[in-house]
Length: 195
View 1 (tube, helix red, strand yellow):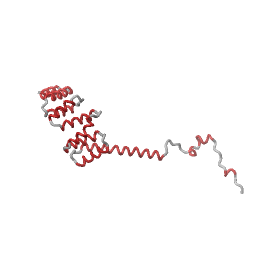
View 2 (tube, one colour):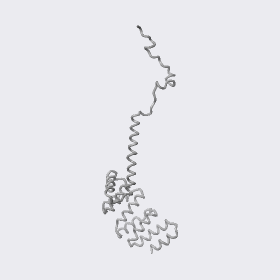
View 3 (cartoon, helix red, strand yellow):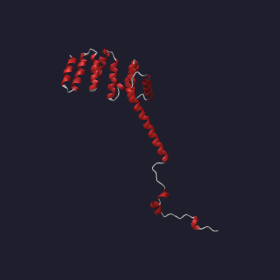
View 4 (tube, rainbow, N blue to C red):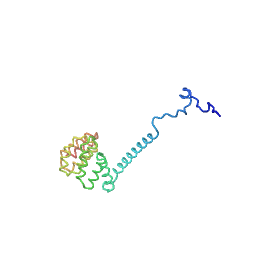
C-alpha cells in the first residue's frame, strides 16, 4: 500500500510562527549553560566559606588567652599560611610576648612597624615599646613621638613613659594628650604629671 504523502513529510513551519507563536519548539535561550553556572556558584560559595571562618576564628583568637598552647598553635599555623596578614602577626606577637619569646615577637613586629596602615603601625610600636626596659624605651619613644597617636595610644604612652624617668618625654606626651582634650581638668592633671 502506498504511503500517504501528508503523513510521511512534516509540514513546513511558517517563519512567523517560529518567531513568536511556537516558543516550545525553539527552546529557551540561555546566557550561560547550567553546568558552568553551577560551577561558578560552587566556587563563590567555597570562597565565602573559606573567608568567613577565618574572620570568625581571628575574632575568637583575639579574645582567647595568649598563653594557651592551642591559641599559639592556631596563630602560628595561620601566620605560616599567610605571613603578610598583619592582624595575625600582631596576635602571634602578643602570644610570643606572653611566652617570653621576645626575639620572635620583635621579628613579627618589625615589618608591621613600617606598614602603611597607621593604626597597625601604632599598635606594633606600642607593643615594641612595652617590651623594652626603661632606658631603651625612652629613646625608642622619643624617636616615634611624632606619629599621629590617638588619645588611647597617648594614655598608653604616658603609662610607658612614667616609669622611665624621662621628664621631657613625659612632658611632651602629656602636652599632646592635653591638646587632644578639651576638659580643663586634663590640663591640671597633665601639669601635675609633668611637674
